[in-house]
Amino acid sequence: MLKFEKIYRDSKIILTEGALVERLKAEFNVEVDNYINHAGLIYTNPDLLAMLYKQYIDIAQKYSLLIMLMTPTRKVNFDSLKKSNFRGKT
Image 1 (cartoon, rainbow, N blue to C red):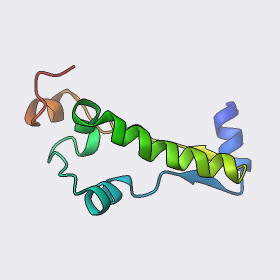
Image 2 (image 1 turned 30 degrees about the vertical axis):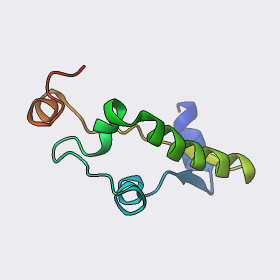
Image 3 (image 1 turned 90 degrees about the horizontal axis):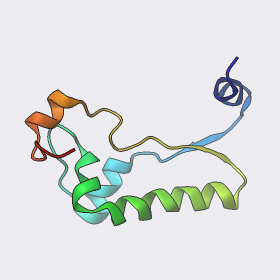
């Protein structure tokens, strides 16, 4: 078994970043792209993403919790990027 799988199966609690997109919309009035969602922030506002992820990392460290973070680009592919406001970006 891979180490990640073992940790995932054996851990009672794993913190994740939760509804990050909903926080972006509610707390920061961020409009996300229809095709790539909040992944566009890596181009337009990477500092905001970094700040939010750091909040979750700080909580995990404070309470000695494991944390599993998803990248904002996890659902992006060439087709969705071509349809988005960020077409042509790499």
